[in-house]
Image (cartoon, rainbow, N blue to C red; front, side, top):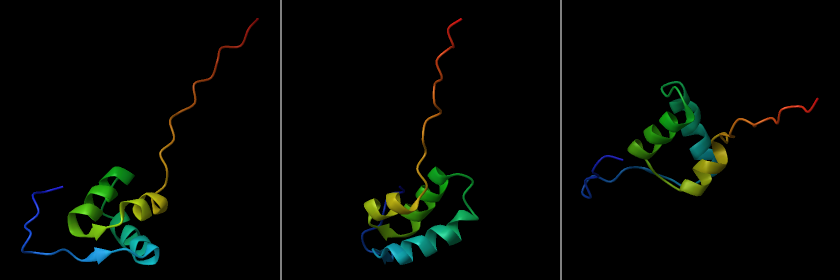
Length: 69
């Protein structure tokens, strides 16, 4: 996050509905979920748990074991 100026408050998003709407709008600007996360936290004060619930989870690729012959 950039150095926030305490005298310039950012809009606050706490409702999951409002966060989902903001994520939807910012999704067109961000190329990845991490970019959307950065844009959202740069422009708004948000409930991070609610944002994490709205953004898709990034699961690691599974590591498949070699088959035995």
